Length: 72
Picture 1 (cartoon, helix red, strand yellow):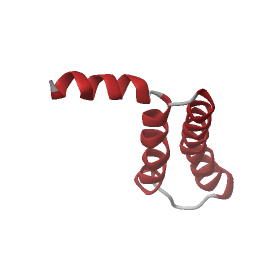
Picture 2 (cartoon, rainbow, N blue to C red; picture 1 turned 30 degrees about the horizontal axis):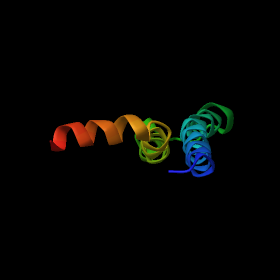
Picture 3 (cartoon, rainbow, N blue to C red; picture 1 turned 45 degrees about the vertical axis):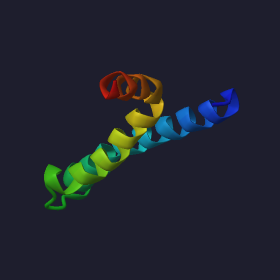
Picture 4 (cartoon, rainbow, N blue to C red; picture 1 turned 60 degrees about the vertical axis):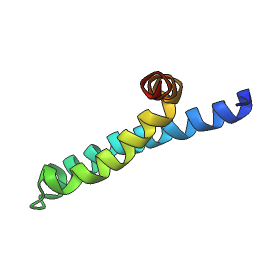
């Protein structure tokens, strides 16, 4: 895999992680700033949808080595 392609995937992973964590800022503003009746369970899927794929993209070399090792 080329260095430039690795950098793009790492950057995309970082963006996904940041967006996944930023969901909690929206939660805090909605709950305490605006006073809406929201729960953490409503925001958790969006958080996980950003953080899990983002970390997989950022740490893909580790996971590829692990899968390769387990497939032997």
